[in-house]
Image 1: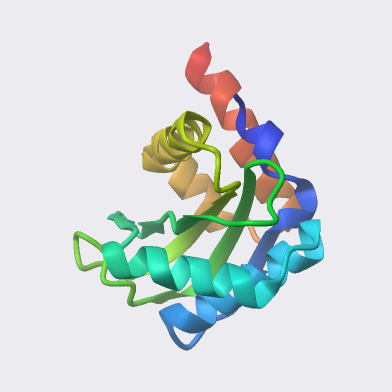
Image 2: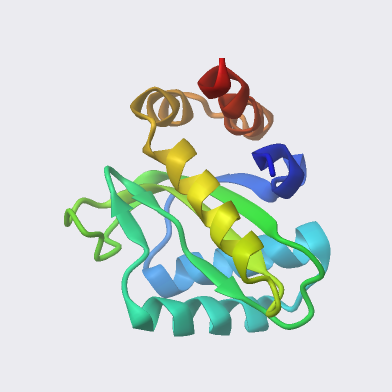
Length: 154
């Protein structure tokens, strides 16, 4: 599995700011609806339910909200860069500005975990984080994320 398999160019967005974690989940839901036609309210509900189990802010300004969702046919990635960081109850208590959402079919057991590990490994890379933070073009952000694996593997 590669990030290019789960993250489409149209699934990357830059937002100036968002007012809350719930509003960010609504933004992810809207992006998922635009990108691959799933119900935005269903996405929000699934992300809120998953977040209630424990925060998905993994530290260093990165969050990886994820959920399994009926009506999703394969694993999909969504990426939002916030120009104004948001308090996200992250493990290191730092605000979040890089958000990689993952939506998987309800039946995606191991594949969901593999995708989550791939995203976590990519988003943990300080050089990738720095590139994501200084670029303000969605297409460039998509390229940074999808080409990250090739440079990590080399």
